[in-house]
Length: 191
DNA sequence: GGGCCGATTAGG
DNA sequence: CTAATCGGCCCG
Image (cartoon, rainbow, N blue to C red; front, side, top):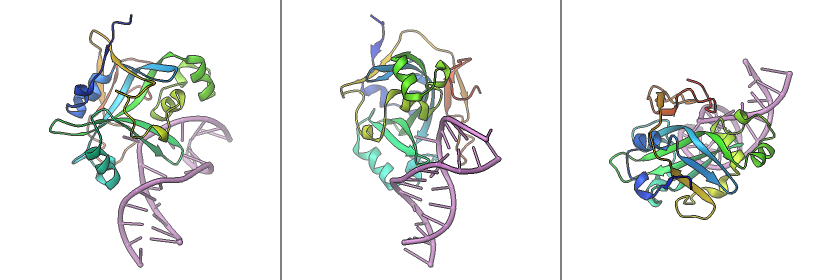
């Protein structure tokens, strides 16, 4: 009895910035591994040059043809899988990138997949956490709110959330659309 | 078809 | 600081 409440489709039918902030503190898991979300970023489907929809027709098609909460997983730098939730239904649509987790369950398995011992090296980056959880391109387009094996729930209470610019982008880098747990040692970048 | 670029990471 | 490594997009 965790006291957590499951997250439904309505959660992702809001502004991506709201979703990104609200996901901080939530439990996210796949298979035998899970963690607490401690860092996210929002991307807007329209007017955001850092979002895939800016250049990629396939990304725009993905937004229009999938339900809120659907997993958008893609290969970055030819070797790293990055996981996003699709957000749509409000005026602004887009994605929330999951950037870091505090490891909670399946830690031995995470250590094996990551080939790292340190707790802080398991999920402290968008590509680290997909590797730790076993998420790949096979999961692109699946629905974590419905499909077997996924976990997404919200704990009671509030969380201290800090805000900064998004990391690793050059276009529209000045938008303060990154959210993270203040002072958390499991984030990808302290500030 | 060729060139270039990326929401990153690990290692020197 | 840089290599690794590959799907998209843009151009010709």
